[in-house]
Image (cartoon, one colour):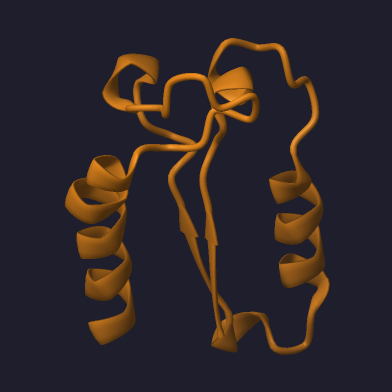
Length: 80
């Protein structure tokens, strides 16, 4: 099983102090299936490396960013 997590703009600016990813990581680590669960985490990138949609109140990443950054990494993790 794969989980993919990535920040929204408000995570990178510090406006969101809490992230569900911490709960997810804790649950995975406590699971008896933790060796069968893969987590693809995009939170550890430099802030200026993200591209967010303009005028999106939740500031999701752009389609271009998904295509060029997220998908290649996700497929690499799945296929290896």
